[in-house]
Length: 319
Image (cartoon, rainbow, N blue to C red):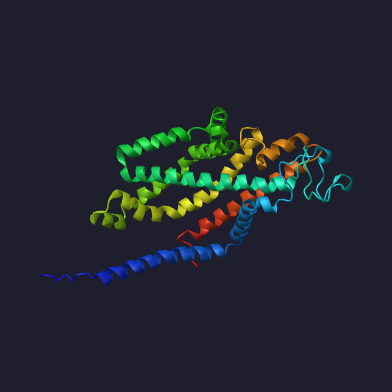
């Protein structure tokens, strides 16, 4: 028995596309609503936003020049310290060179925020590109790329970072912005592996799904399939992993600067403040405790955000 096919009009196709886009938007709206109800995630988000604002307005917020030295007024206690050794004009006291600790903490936030976000963006782009190609192409391409990632993954992260920072420290790249560019590149080189492996796993689980087969049947090119169909559906776990990775990058900078192979002086960072304050820690602990507290608070805030995003983007969660 013959069947009569009804042609699909342009208006019907547009309506179907609008329905699909509406569903996609509603998924993100639902995720945001779930995230808003997570109090810990909201606290973390407020802390991160405040840290970004302070870092962006450091030159207006900081009460003193962070590079100004006054050895006649060094190692002053904070306002809650010993009245005999404190200076009311320096809320958090001064370090061994007489520099205002509060001003240095504020300026150091710039480096930590940059170290957190910029390498995360580079890691995301490299990892997603490699993972997409490996997962979608399969075969020999997948095998070569994954063996390469396994070779890099075999090195301990911190040791690999120390080797890169020390070996390239005196090069032209290592001297740009006090070594900040080299730090970005080193963190990106070491940490894209996890994103690539996660992306590959997501692509392998998605590329045989019906919507991908339908895209192939319509003659869509592989690049279009990866960017328009696979990437949006693999995005949620990648966002969660990136949120959890940002505090790790901040800790990398603090650790490398504490060891003396991070950002070059006199650029203030929380890690370099730990390094400088450790010399007088037994007599004046505040130059160490205050930057350590800042590092802990920012890392905890990003961890709260990561936990909230993981729950909010979980499709099994219900409003």
